[in-house]
Structure formats: C-alpha cells, structure tokens
Length: 254
Ligand code: BG6
Image (cartoon, rainbow, N blue to C red; front, side, top):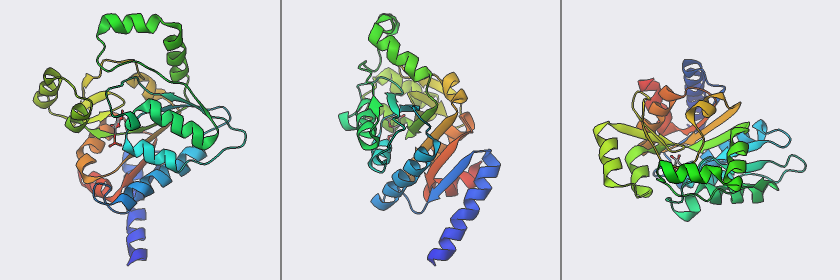
C-alpha cells in the first residue's frame, strides 16, 4: 500500500509540475492540519530543496509562520556557504515565534549563516513608512532584501492571517467583501490570484518576487488549499512543497 501511495504521489507531482510550469514540486503524504508528521515532512523536504538552491553567500529572504519554523528545524550546518537571512517584511504583529525576524535567527543558527533584522510594525501608514525608509539601518536591510537570490515563504488563509495579525475591522471587512482567500508575504489575494490588499509595512514587493531566481513556496493543510491554488494563479513559478491534501485539490482546480 505504501508503494502504491508513493507512486500515486509521484504521478501527481508530474501532472502538477507540467500543468503549472514549476521548476520542481514535492508532495508529502497526508494533511498537515491534522498530522504533525506531515508538517514535519514539509519542513524536511523544503530544507532539502533550500540546500540545493543556495549558493556561496546567498541572500535569502524569509517569511514567518509555523511552516517556516519547521523548515528551520531541518536546515543543516554549512561549511563555507554562509547564507545571509533577511526577513521578507517587517511586521511585529504576528506571534513572536512566527515572526520573520525570529525565523531568520533560527535559520542562521542552524546553517552557520548570518542574519539581519527588520524591526518595523504592521500597518504603519504612509508617513511613518516614508520616515522609516529613510533610516540608514532600514535602508540597508531593504537593499539586501532586494538583492536576494532565494525567497522561502509560507502561504496562509487570508482571514486566518488577518486575525493572527490582529488586523483592524476595516481591513477584515475589505478582505471579506472582496473575497480574499489567501495571503503570502503580506499580500492578500482572491481565488483568481488578484491582489486585494497588502499589509502596510516595509517588505518585499510582488514585482521583486516574480524576478527572484529561486522562489521556494511551502504550504500544507486542507485549510490552506484554496489559498495555495489562488497563490499559484497569481505567481505560478519556482519550487513548490505541499502536502497531499493541497495537491489533490490543486489537480481538480488548476
Ligand atoms: C506568516 C507569513 O508569518 O506566516 C505569511 O508572513 C504566511 O506570509 C504565514 O502566510 C503562514 O503561517 P503558517 O503558520 O501557516 O505557516
């Protein structure tokens, strides 16, 4: 049965890879919402792909989230290639252990790499944002962020993320009325991959994401299936690590 299941997932990988035009896809068995093992496998497989993608002195943009925290767990010490980890956006609204800053520290520790931090809040408003962008420290991080050759990130359900970040009512209303289903690196999008809103903080732009050489997307769990499908309609490229629950939905939808 195990053998049959794994051939089945390999077939699914081939089908999705060619249908979506991805560089590579890995599907792990199960549903990460209900199985801690599946979530661990996502982390493990994503770490393998990360290690294949980085070069000497790679600059790696990283988002937050429990999935990225799991990926960090499986990263391995590197001898010479000292990657530099940069948070893909500010945003101190999320739980501490899920913040991009915290994940960067963890990934740097695991790989013998370096990190920089970005201490700016969520929802800053244009005036504060402009002022922050003038700060030399912030400027430096933004410039490094823009030079990244790898971005590794999670995807979330739109409202789950808005709640986790304690977004205000107006934002939540906007997300509901415009039928946002997914969120990634601070952008909220609908099921067709149209951007609805963006967390008002300093962070990587979609234009930059689309040009990044190694875009690594990691997400699992049936509660995220619509979010992942929508994300792939928006940005269908790169390296994708998902679980079976998401994969079976994608093959029906995309
Ligand atoms: C957040 C990222 O921290 O984690 C989001 O900024 C992402 O872009 C989210 O959608 C995913 O969280 P989790 O816990 O489901 O991996």
